[in-house]
Image 1 (tube, helix red, strand yellow):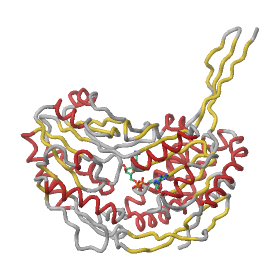
Image 2: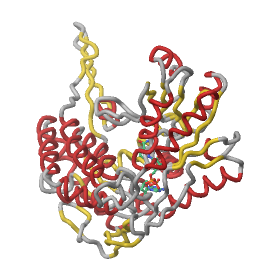
Image 3: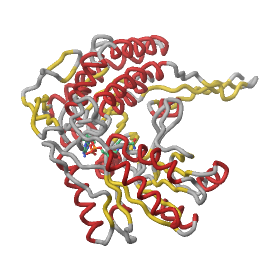
Image 4: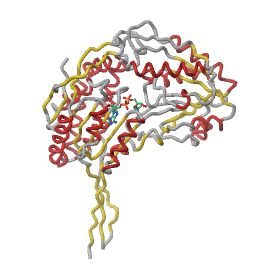
Length: 467
Ligand code: NAD
């Protein structure tokens, strides 16, 4: 499988390669190109060269090209989905959903508009404002939803008139690199480039002086490193970082009926979803019933290779991710927690961990404070709703949170949650129309919809005097 980097309209396999593992088998199944710092420079230079032509197109012309990108990607959903399953581990049906959503996202984005705004229109003066592109956008994507989280950057950046250099995660590069190859059939040379490599290549790209904006999705430490380096040149950054979303179940809620919905919202992509439920707070009298219903669901989960029919949950994306999750469970067990139905690494060759419910955790465990990013779900019993809200807000994160139960009560409790999105009787539902972003260590800036598009623009004001 020869998937290359797209640099200046040409697909290049690069001088060096890096291994790409199938996490369901824990073995290398392909090699991806490994960019050199010189190739990063070339990709940025080609994006700089393509910028005047691309930004000079009308908004409508760029929107039409984005629609064409979406149409083309729809024809390749099966191919992209297979690559996603092989490199990320998710079941093929989920991978198809992600690839189709990525194709659709070009259309959703193309439907947005950025009209010039008239701010003052008086006899003596006219002031208007337009939104212009930054120049070259560095788009750095994570390993959990490689394709859609690349497209949610690439599509609005291009629509606003920027050119792009995309760096997918070195763990899951293939579907994204293949996508940029395909986009090259529609877009002019140099408009959407890709480079591949790990954190050092990510840093070479994001620290490049010709980059106008860095749009990053990934972990808190990497986001912090990018923000630090961006400060040097006052580079604009959008950082979508980790989450540790709490779900508060209200007194009076039917926990047995809610359990399957809460379980599903926690186990999305095996818990490897920034806005998955990562902690549950439930009234003490209901805790045993909810925990036991969740444990039954965990015990029934069907794990396996994502390419096989019937698989509900694939492996974790890497050995490092699995090791981290098992260490969190071990620490909880040592602290006296009960592990239900018993975290197991099943007898499969890959990085598998069975869905696991953790209860009776004392305060101050890592599983409450940190993001597990794995199918490990801690359940905490609370005495008062105020206590639940305080604990929900008591971590460094502020991405999302949800409240479940009577709608009116839930809406009023949700006003106390200090995060970017609150959900009522659902969790993690993201939409192309609604902005999404976090507070505190969960990041800065916004993605999706009109508000996400604005991040890819700078304001220019025109002030006309009419004496
Ligand atoms: P990661 O930080 O390990 O890697 C993400 C990307 O950053 C990769 O492409 C990597 O090569 C690159 N990178 C790493 N260090 C870098 C540096 N110093 N400079 C530039 N680039 C660098 O994250 P991951 O494991 O792929 O993703 C999981 C994390 O992403 C979780 O914390 C998750 O919550 C978060 N995430 C957040 C959102 C959101 O919208 N808030 C969405 C998805 C994932």
